[in-house]
Image (cartoon, rainbow, N blue to C red):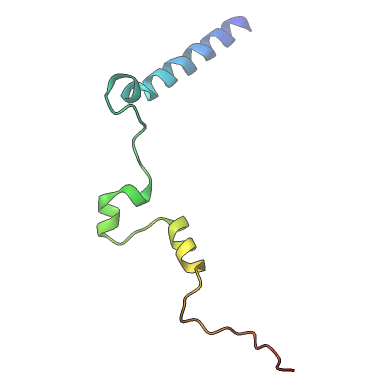
Length: 73
């Protein structure tokens, strides 16, 4: 049981070290920006982030007509 735990911790430690190579050894010291909105090729094709599209769709247009009519007393 202890042998399995040590092997598991060793594998996790190696994985974390390999994932952090870019952060540990390069000047930028940040994870790469891999979000859809940061990809130039996706932007050229007009493909955007779903969250950004949803936020834009939920914004109320200044030209929208209110559907609720207030009763005049």
